[in-house]
Length: 150
Image 1 (spheres, rainbow, N blue to C red):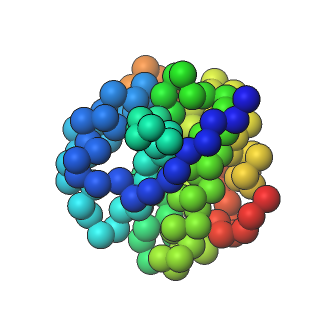
Image 2 (image 1 turned 90 degrees about the vertical axis):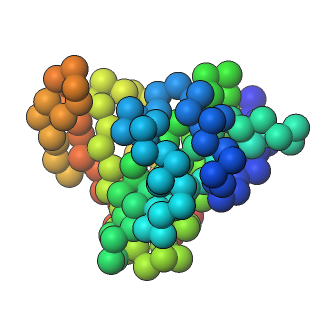
């Protein structure tokens, strides 16, 4: 089942709802109010037709590269295409800001996220040993053409 969502720029008034999303990084939760107003950030939310915020994506653009900092989807809306829609919208946003490549880190054990990232053209190009606070390794992934549609 696919859920219809609208992806729009995140606004400061979205911060509390964004913080409720599971899987959001600790640094994102702490710095969200600042990140939502920074010029070097692309912050997007996915909302259902009745206005429920069900997803968030944030990227950092520096010169000609971007970094996906966070992608979170409400548990009730996972596996319905929300993550894909958010990620594709984020890739388009960073491309329009001049990014020719996008990188991200993902837990080695996060099979669902790995599948999503591979589906939209990311490839594993390295790893960051013991990257996460619990000691798990991160896989370093890149996509060299962030605006291409699949």
